[in-house]
Every structure is written in structure tokens, then in C-alpha cells.
Length: 118
Length: 118
DNA sequence: TTATATGATTAGAAGATTCTAATATAAGAT
DNA sequence: ATCTTATATTAGAATCTTCTAATCATATAA
Image (tube, rainbow over the protein chains, first blue to last red):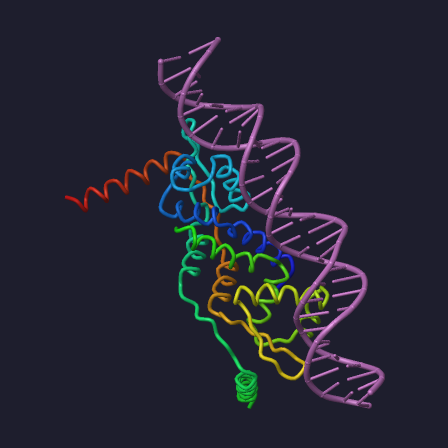
């Protein structure tokens, strides 16, 4: 993976990587919400929600449309956000491999390579 | 989203959210690697690689099998890791909505709800 | 058993993130 | 005009993360 892409992706993932921000994203997955809607749901201050929304906005994960004094926030990349949340909610059993399994895997991929050549 | 889950997922995403760790994960996606293999690829010190591997290990994203003095690292949740990398590499155009679009969306979902009741 | 290779740990400085308190801004209501 | 409602900004303390330097541990080779 090239380092620029790694850096860029890490920045994006950092925006996801906070409990409050994940909850905001999940809520916006259900539909447009304004800041006071989120205040009703999340146990954090208005100021803090605004700050997290700024982080999400900088990451281009959310944006808003102004409606009078109210800002209607929405997901600007819903497929990305929903994809991440779906992946996280799936069950991913933790594998364990022995040295022997790894050796066998290497042997197998070696054979395949030979087979392709032959 | 319940707060415990949000916290847990945020912890997991933090493990992903570093350029060097993403590069390690991408490399392990290609197959088992030991620490010196990674030293050859990444422009960081052995110590730093070990530290990042510890973070990844604590997040249960990688594990290793010992082979003499060498540790063969592998992805312990390859579907999860590859899923995240695949999502990130896909193109996700950034949407923009006007207040009017949002109003129309709300009207539509309202109608749907009424239709179900009728 | 001494040397070499592989990899981990620890301490601490530097930097980034997060939260709170105070304040600001802008729209709509009175 | 003033008040209220909705939301953002700023400053700074507290905390967390990351990197470097030094050191340790273990396995194998000489």
C-alpha cells in the first residue's frame, strides 16, 4: 500500500474512531438530523456534538443543509459509513494458526504457483 | 447504537487508524510475514513495528505463530481487515443535498409510512 | 559459551485529541 | 430592539498516542 494512501485512509478512519462520532453516524444512517435531535439521544453537551460534527465534516463523512436557524445534517458518503457499520456489526471469529498450518499454507501456495507455470 | 458497542467499535477502529498499521495489515493480507519482512518494506524502525504489532495484537486483528526465533504474523480476522481495506479503496462520491431535497425525502418516507398503514 | 539475529519492553519527550467553560453568531419570535 | 433558540468557536487543561533511545530476552550459530 502506498504511504500517501495509507495516510489518507488513516485520517478517514480516525474520524470514525470515536464512540460519540460512531453514534452520530449511526443516527444519521436513519435519516437527516439536526443538532438538537442528537442532543436528545446522546449524553454529551451541544458544544461537544458540534465539535464532533466538525471532525466528521472535515473528513467529508457528513454535511448539512441550512434550514433557518437549524442545520439538517446528513451522511455525505452513506455507502461508506453504512459499509463500515455493517462490517463492524458482523461476527468475525478470531483465528488461531500454528506454525504447522502456516507451513502447509506456504507449501500449498508454492504448489499452485508451480502448477500455473507447468 | 448502544454506547458499549460504540466504545468497543471505536477501540477497534483506532487500531486501524494509523498509516503504518494500515500498511502492516495490507501486507499481512498478502500472507504471513515476520517482523524483518516488514522492516524491509516500511520506512520505520524495528522497535516501532513491534509497537504497532502490539497494538494490532491487542485489538485482535493479528496474531503470530512462533518459529524458532522468528514470529510469523498473520491476520486473525482476515474478513474484517480485508473488508475495511476494500471499502476504503472503493470510490465513494461525496453527496450534497439542498434543504429542498431533504424535504422531499421526508415527504416520501412520510407517504410510505401512510401507505403501509392504509 | 560467546556472538549474532530476531523481536519485545520501557521511559520519557513531543505531539495530538478530547472535553469543559466561556463566549460568539445568526435566525426567528415578541 | 430584545429575547430566545440553534449552533459554532475559542482557549486551555487533562489525557492519550506516538516516536526515539536504551535495554532486554531468547534462539540459534560459531
